[in-house]
Image (cartoon, rainbow, N blue to C red):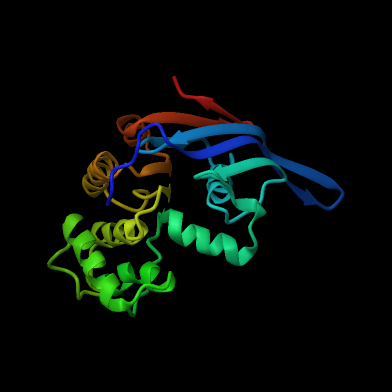
Length: 232
């Protein structure tokens, strides 16, 4: 992984609003949200259930479209791309980690981590050493051939993090990455995220209910009543 300039703007989100229609009524999830995230920065987004945190994360990842506003990732307005173009862009520039790891159960840890590379057009022979190096880096060098069902919860999440990083993305989006883990295992994941951020220059945006984790990693923003504000 290459170091990046800490001043480079990875996410530029301007006056974004997301509404949904429910019959004759329009439901506003949030409105006029602006957010800038630089390379090597970690931003935690907290807030009550139903506040729209995951919706915002999906917008930032190009998995959903804003009702109005502008979202730029690495200088690209992702919502001007076709669906296929957004998929290619996500593969090249973004990584995703969820509360439930979403690993393919029939694949080994190594095969799961290789998958984004192969989907992006890389030959398996080129993808394998990249995946092996990342799994070793996250402490799973001895578990390459194990399938998800043979790994602990913390190990599965480490595989998911390695998979998110294998294409050297500018930003990794994480939705409750420790929400399904015990406190000790969650602390190990927090330390891993911190180390990877500091050494890779990758930005991390994390939705979490864990305030101690949020505060330990970097900037904390609260999404409440449709507004995104700096947490004191």
